Image 1 (cartoon, rainbow, N blue to C red):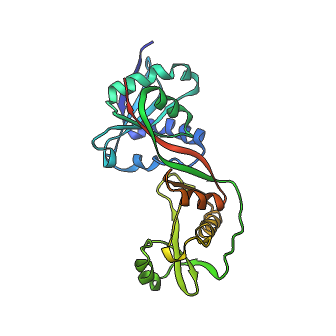
Image 2: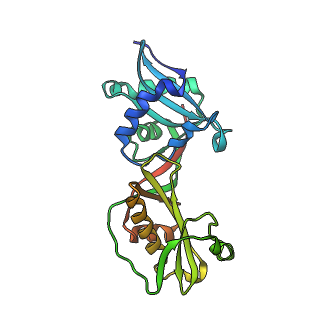
Image 3: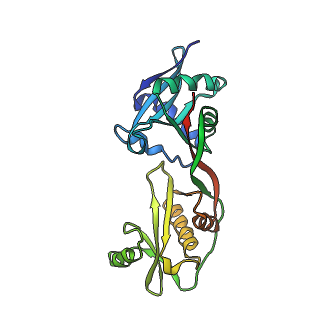
Length: 252
């Protein structure tokens, strides 16, 4: 039986993408690439004439000069042929790089088989613990236009929706982004230099988690592997590491 990969439309792979999302059951970091016109090339996988999955290649934005395979799915009954299906996908697509989150078991196995020089871009976190931090004199509130000057002076995100206020001063800012797959929301925050090492970062993350749940969403987060301060802040607020964003150069 011939195994092959053929160019396909996004609409053509949607049934397999729904199955992929269901199996992942977590925040999918590269989910939104599909919705950006011209950013991705889809491929359907075939065993003979039967469609058995798909692969997605990022070809624009940060991946313009290095076509990157970032999503891959094979229906369960054909997973004994996964390696044999992956090879024609690489050859047909011309992918130079593979990028995946390590809690995606299918593509992570392919990454470590078909790529070299694998590195971690980010640590992924999911929420597992409820905390009750309450730093003295600190409150979390919605940002207002009046906060703009203080956000700018402290090099905080001017677009942040939430701030921590201490003694009527903006000490930290953050929010929840939904540029991945809902209901997962990506929590971000930054504490102004004069207010660091007071537990304000974990307090803000804790409250952003609460806001996320109250809106019917699920909080998630990530940070650079070398950013020890952010790593500790997220863990103190109840986040637990669940994976890495990994990438490697294709080696055929």
